[in-house]
Image (cartoon, rainbow, N blue to C red; front, side, top):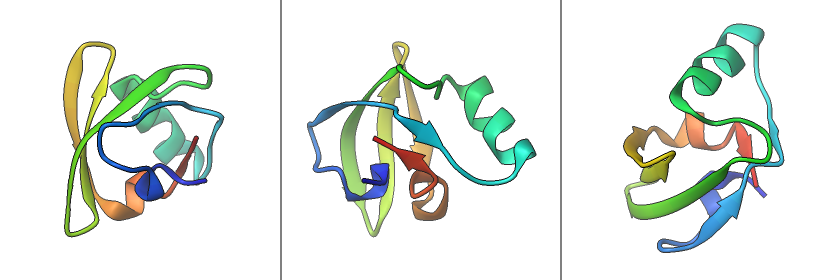
Length: 69
């Protein structure tokens, strides 16, 4: 399921990152790697705030939908 569908407060494992090469590289530099842990902090209007590697990151709904958990 895409990260955008994960409920707030849930801790998930990244299974796959889809999209163009540049998009996947960008998400990897933010800490989204296969097998990595992602916790959804909050969701507002489809946009997410997540914890990745002890950092809080805001993601748009379109970016979050490219991360499969």
